[in-house]
Image 1 (cartoon, helix red, strand yellow):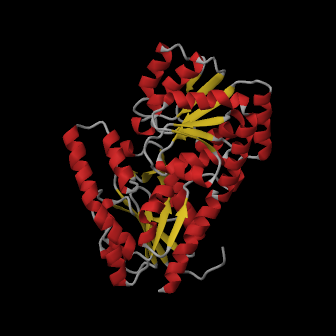
Image 2 (cartoon, helix red, strand yellow):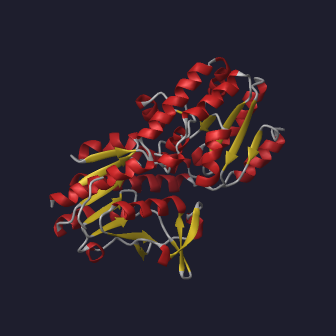
Image 3 (cartoon, rainbow, N blue to C red):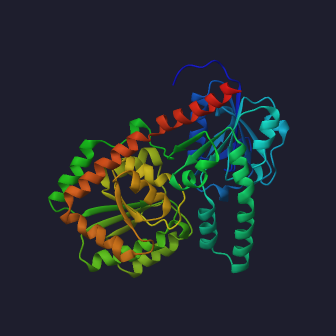
Length: 396
């Protein structure tokens, strides 16, 4: 990244909430790391405008002293639109397109001659699928689906009017990429160059499997229905019935944690399937991925641009997962795993069972996974995103 003179203040308008706790503030850990990266790369000040939320909204969070943050933090009520007073004088405004209440900012920024860039993560189909998967009654699903659909036209107008668009993942890129002449496609990930998996680690895994050792399967993330974790136990039961030697480690917490524990006990799978709770991403989960796991199982039925994909691949873990549009888009770009029709538990188990007879295929996909992760590492991705912001600023 080339040196730039001080460009003034970058204003981030987020969909992620923050929870005040006395003199401290509770923030999503991944989000906080991302904003700190903006601070290190943007040649000027950073101000973050966030909706106020509760601790319940932030399952993977921690408390921070406001004095330790490198950015200014402004909290607003959850459903309050940002007024021109908040952004007047900014050098650039980066807005989450997932925040329904901030789609007017492209027009405000145009009037104030401030470059506005939107981040697009979820397309309409993904939003509607998420509503369908929610545990709410049919009438609420119809109301939510109608509201989301009506908001889509406003979202598309905002993306078209903006000075730039950053699309996270294949579905968002395909849905919105043609609306704007300045589009940057990226893949979300927390894996920095120092955390990246090594070829030698892949070699060690391949040698283990060649010597007939059991497969070490893994899933991590929210243990919620929307992430498809309810299919993990049926997959394990099918593998056992096929006499496939394996261990499945599950990391995370969520609505289905108790149900999973009960189903593991009821199916007598405790020696094969283990619930490990939440662990620290950088110091615990990444080393586990790199040295103690062979294959990631991803039963996401929705097409959200989950960082799960890049984080597993960057550690040398091929993925066997459902062919939602996010994962199928990645598979069309790189040979990094196996795609299976959504909900087809038997086919997932078959793919896993066949790996023992296809070690060379496994190795090819594991190495491709590392290469794909290296291409989209955390530092390079953020540098490209900041460069786009700077270019938009310099044009005005």
